[in-house]
Length: 102
Length: 173
Image (cartoon, rainbow over the protein chains, first blue to last red):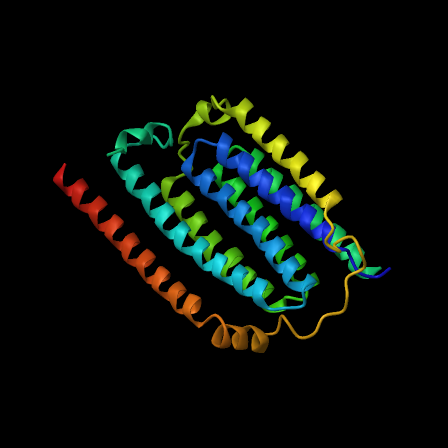
């Protein structure tokens, strides 16, 4: 017994994803919300890379790299929105942002 | 044996720091906890025979993205934002129910699946080196690769437009 079975990695992946989900649903501060989204993406990445090792192929790692690119783009736009909103009004709360609708 | 010890620390770090990210009140502390979680995930990637992805994780995530977060947190001056409401959100009970249901589902699936995920992992070939990744990108995933460059370009243009419009509206006031 030298290696760690894949199921443990998947467990960590699920735990990170669920913590991120909890953060997304309970936090009202857009900055912390984006942090929680990062956690969810990382949890998914662990599963992708884990299955990549399981099937002895590179594909899962490619997907993980693409996810990182999407995460970078998402953070840039998200933080841009946060800063833009912050300059307009001084309170940051995603529930108040419903007024931006339409 | 060594691998199991390293995995234990990395898994505990990943879950512990993730919990801190969700639980800590201020954005600055949560962001610093996120660094810990991302580095733990990088260690997990190394254990999964993916050294290149681990390096990218450290450079792009723990480096660039977290620095961007810290920069915005410093710019906004840790001004807290939606103070009280942050903690007692209306949907908190619903959120916990969803998370618990999904956790139960994950445990059931992992415990009953017929995939060979509970066995000793088989040795793998060269799947994580920069060469293998590059070959895979060029051979089979050339279109997604080019699409990512387009996505990054659009994101950069979008960020510039957002900033510009914000400055214009501020001047107009």
